[in-house]
Amino acid sequence: MAKRRRFRKKARNPAERRLLDELGAGRPLAVPDCAHQSDCGGCTWQRIPYRRQLEWKDETIREAYRAADWGEIALEGVLASPKAFGYRNHMEFSFSARRWLTRAEIARGAEEERDFALGLHVPGGVGRVMRIDRCSLQVPGANRVLRALQEFAAGSGRGAWRHREHTGFWRFARIRHAVGTDAILLGVVTAERDEAVMTALAEHLERSGVALSVLANGVTDRPADTSEGATWYVDRGAGTIVERIDGLEFELSAETFFQPNSHTAGRVFGLAAEMAGARGDERVLDLFSGTGTLSLFLARRAKEVRGLELVPASVECARRNAARNGIGNADFEVVDLLRGVPDEERTRGYDVVVSDPPRAGMHPKALRAILEMAPPRFVSVGCNPVTQARDLAVLVREGGYRVTRMVGVDQFPQTPHVECLVALERG
Image 1: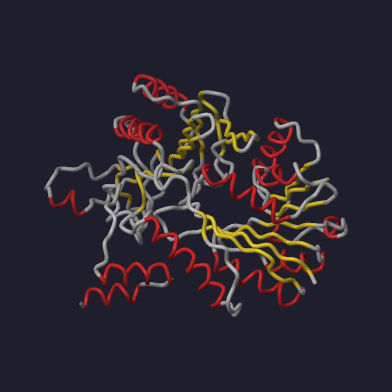
Image 2 (image 1 turned 90 degrees about the vertical axis):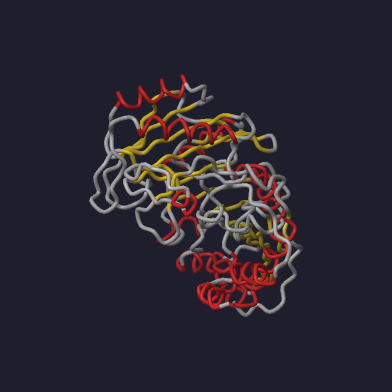
């Protein structure tokens, strides 16, 4: 009992509290699909039946809005993902010279290699990485790539990254899968460029029977524990793979952002376009436009769409995606939205503004710009109901907006995370 109270004290959000309540009540639980579930912090809800996960995510959204003083909200519910496992199209794994042994590994007394690991970080452990042989959230082909990379890197003679000393060669691995074309991209991030090692890796993957479309090498010697900002080289393939969703094609590279669940992405984009209410004459501004996915869905219904995005590589990819799909009424610009919306954009008279910000939500300057622009309609796509409720409260209280529709979409089965789309109208 004391142990349960200690864990309860650490439950910082409604999702965690409900999980502890469920475990404490002794209700029937699901059998985890992943051998790493009890040690990895990535998909903590595997023991919860999927139907119940959807119910909890519905309540997560409602509680986030109640906490932001919205009162009761008219949520239509949370739409299920067509796949509860094997749905992620993108995973990033870390290398480390400090392998974290799981309880099962310690119990069996196996002599495990301690100075090399490729897998996922242990919750709360800086630089401590547990080896992952199979992640049940990604497709089997991606898991074969992961195992082949582990085998090669461990025997390559080049060391894994030491997080404290900031030394070593192998740093991160990104694996992308395009559901529409079944293509796989592997992006390996290293501390320096070694073309001979990448050539040998490509040959090893081929001998292992791995069906790989692209091998890219990102290089960064920055001490920060992130792969962002790496310089990328293409060692095999064209450098991008193609995803197909609802009649549109999107190029994906190792460094560009895309919705993590291709099985629900079309539903999210379609709902957002529907909520925008475009009928052919509207001018639409897409904030945090990424590789242009939502913009292109909107462009099929609107007169003109303009996307603003911070990452230059994503903007270039968005422009290629527009050309690839023969869409000429969407254009994209590199803009740091942390500094607000440029003056020239504020005076364009947009009919609709849509926003799909990162988990931290929108910067106050961007919110202030929207209030000044006062578009008749605003659509929010958010992966964090807490920050979304906070941001939209500003538009409702200061801008005279009212919510006309709210729908949840489960993009992240087996986790507490949930996507929420909200449509607002002014006046």
